[in-house]
Image (cartoon, rainbow, N blue to C red; front, side):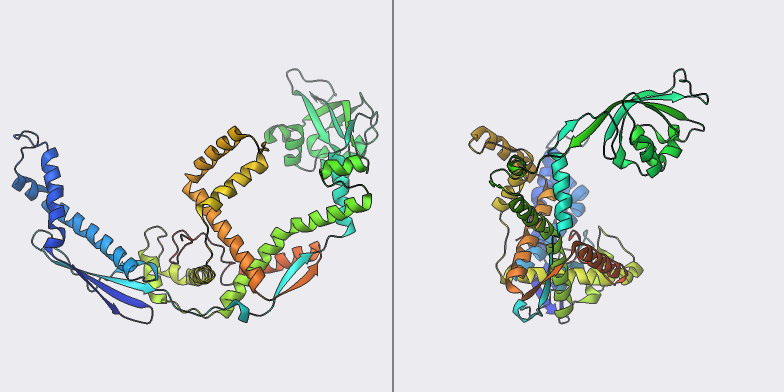
Length: 477
């Protein structure tokens, strides 16, 4: 067997694989002898069918199969041995490949076209200064968080009169036009959280009521819509829409959360181990935690903007015609030539970003090890199920759970990608020149909205595509 390569362009080449009979003959004989031992043909005892008969019956198919395997293995090994960085997969050159006759032909020549990854320069230190947004945490946000937290850690009480932020429970009974209970009608316990009501007029009916009060509920008058009525009364929508349906609600109990006192005991419940003693120190801790909570969103925007800047500032030529042929030939994402032309801008941007990723990972020796993926999974479950760190049986059970997750190749791939993205983000933060800009949460939300609106009308999105089936390479290092 011989393999030769001819460059057909700056980023394309054609590989010719010449195979003769001695390259595949031994394997064909081995397969046919296995057929001979297993064949069950009338008139012959098992294993006693003449080899010539087996060869005549199965020889052509076996030769074709073995030649195809040899071709597939040879092209893959050639690419690996030659350290060729290719895009997509080899494509059979239909013009040069002639029709094969496996009955009479002994020697074969196969031609494959390759798309070669471009060579390009990429130096992060040469890039312009990038904005890094820091969301400011104002006093209104802190007050809102503290009020919600005081309620969460507050005490449940049962007042005599309904307040604007209370929850009521009672019995709902279906009634007729005269206000009398309907025999075999709906009777059920129900809870209504006052703040969840959308109609102010309904809130006004409830606020001020006392235990054992009764009030009328006509669902589509009392609630804003069928969905709200169905959710709060726990009834099917078709029942809510029934003509003339009405209920009497008897108020049995009022539930109110009395906010926790702003004292040392409360501070330590919210932040155990911090030893916070004053309201000022508590507010400072809330501010710090809130700012940290915004980091994932600002990091995501920073990563996306670096992505776009790298794409716009880095010249990366592609073998476009080859890639279009590859997309047309692709077995998974079957597309027409017209669809490929329409969507090629998206595909080429995705490929270029993948090439940038790969170069950054190689140049900066970034990798993700299996141990890191296992630790990621373990850390996730430790946040969900608190465990005594000194409990060896607990760690054994956790390791068993991690082993189970590691068998899910799709989940492992997603974790692998996430860890690579985190490492790239760290690289961008350390290598790029950045300027921090403070921005309010509302301003940040408007900025995101305007970017998403622009991207919706642009030629391609933010390139955070699933790489599966794309012609570029993946993070399988």
